[in-house]
Length: 516
Ligand SMILES: [Zn+2]
Image (cartoon, rainbow, N blue to C red; front, side, top):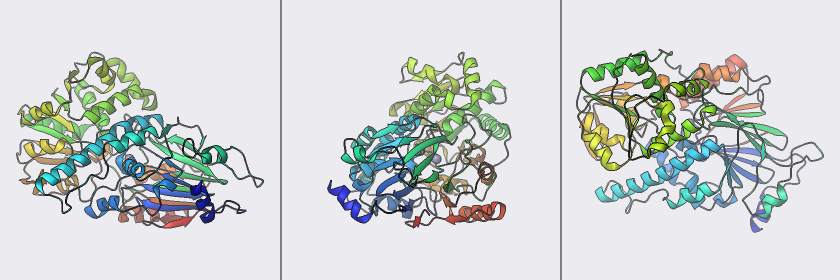
């Protein structure tokens, strides 16, 4: 009760036209840490709750206290399960957040993999830092521990696509029961905020969150997917919103034109001819599926040799199963290819066969999943030519580090990056041509070939973004650009202004704007 009284003083609900504001607590002027605070009619709703990643000065923001009390947040809405959109949730929960976490069912499934894994990695990193004295802090602490994701997962409230639902307060609170009554005030403004998820085609379960509050429609774009790509459907069109938050990751760039897998085929074939390994650092969810789609297709078309393919990531294996169980939410082509894949020779180390049967839509001819650390160590030591897919995608941590340490200094191997590489990450250093790289506390000279396949990005480039914007039949009253580096933000703002004459604003960190 004291919480409500407190809030009534700060945010009077009796105003004739309720104040609505947005505060950008992350992914403003940068691509990670998505957190957008919507305050309306005395309620606080946090849309996305992501980790800052990449440069040290950004990562250090994860340790700064939020400018609001976590316990005062009524609800969280998640657009998708990438860590830069959901990875701060356990920290928010450990700081006292007890509200519901709205997302699609698939986002909840993927969060059940990525959040415990993130806690595990942070605990491991803190342990390593303490063991080797890496950290200037003594002792080094994890941002959160395994207890926190477990608690966060109990607060999830999955909601299917295209179904507006009221945003309720914490379970069992009087706030949830007394304030959440659908209806309209005498001026026709909605009394109860609602959220609706619309498929964004960026990751399994990914969505734009359409929030309706006090007569306004605010579309939180999350991350925008791409058109005509395998695995995921095209982003759904949206016709109107009063306010739009739009990501700008590739606001200044175009992806390579689709080459029908030619470059990947050349990289695989060349590496095999040298007798080397192809190491693919990959985001454990999303990118693994697309890489496997292409490898499977190139094998079927006899455009690459049939090599052993190892998935060395328990999280990727779990995600593959979720993808395979939700083919109806994915690109229609996958359901068709599933029929032909039953003959594949999928092998399984450490997983029950019945569980693995469900990933056949993605299985290459000689695919093996690696579960235990010992099997992973054996694979690192193996000299057999192979394709190894391991997390993390920007080589910031995870099992791929040991694979890189074993291969990066030998020219017969290839390291292929397949997604966005944030500034400050090992992945970015390598694709920018670093001659040496630090891995697990040691410096290694770089002699392996380093390749980058941008065509597998899950983010729309600026042409695709403009195509999606063309679906609007009425310009948004304001388009706030988020989730981009400064050059990309400026370029996309200039393009929208020039081509559409829409009002555009580049969000700044901790900036608060009124939604008029
Ligand atoms: Zn994303």
